[in-house]
Amino acid sequence: MDTKDLLKKVRKIEIKTRRLSDHIFSGEYHTSFKGRGMTFSEVRQYQFGDDIRAIDWNVTARYNEAHVKVFEEERELTMMLMVDISGSESFGSKNQFKKDIVTEIAATMAFSATQNNDKIGLILFSDAIELYIPPKKGRSHVLRIIRELIEFQPKSRKTDLAQALKFLSGTQKKKAIVFVISDFMSEEYEHTLKIASKKHDITGIRVYDIREEKMPNLGMVSMLDAETGAIELINTSSKAVRMNYEKQYHNKVTYFKETFSKSGSGVVNTRVDESYVTKLLSYFKSR
Picture 1 (cartoon, rainbow, N blue to C red):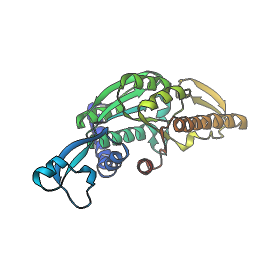
Picture 2 (cartoon, rainbow, N blue to C red; picture 1 turned 45 degrees about the horizontal axis):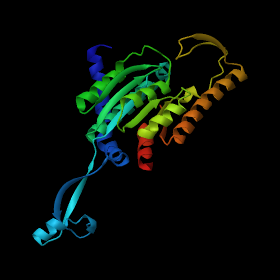
Picture 3 (cartoon, one colour; picture 1 turned 90 degrees about the horizontal axis):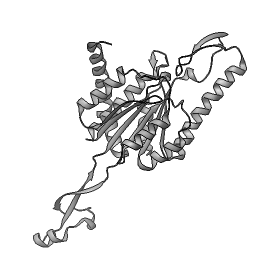
């Protein structure tokens, strides 16, 4: 993709996702993810309905009129976007690739964090850490993140979420809001997720395509394994082959849901042909 096309694509995603974060998500995001506590802001005259526990007795005595302390939420949060860029993310049907939806979700989250003056960092992972962008604030930083999400080419096509979570724990010493965006076709990450979720507020956002759930009956078919690059001849007319595929697929989905729930992490499932806006909003409201 040349620079002109890339900038055009970045701008298009910015317009769409910024509108969503400005009008829909920033308020919900602010409510769902609290800051580190309350910090003293000012003293003002007591008004009917104020909490009497907030009365500043020294100022009240000085002015012979009730005054209360006003506190503000101390935010300064860090959001980490952990995005799976392995081979299976390139799957798509109905004119929509998983990768495109993943990019939009990540961009929407990043702009929501920016609206709340929070820092945003990015981890792109396969079975290794492909790219790490340390958390920073600002629009230009978010645009860089979107650029990387669009054009970054992974060195590996495989997935290892456990490695990515280990990296997160090693680099983020303070509590962060973490969104892991993937199809979660990885396994054996229960232990590392449990450790990471003790420190961080983690949500897994599973992006999937309905056509991945079942193998169609098409006879003998040459199939490319998106994560190994190997081409295999598969007999899709065999009921046993189709059932085995579906079983493995559903086992991984169940593992994702149960593992995230057990560790106290959030779970969102969104199909590429569904509105991720509706899914995320209902998730924020349920927190």
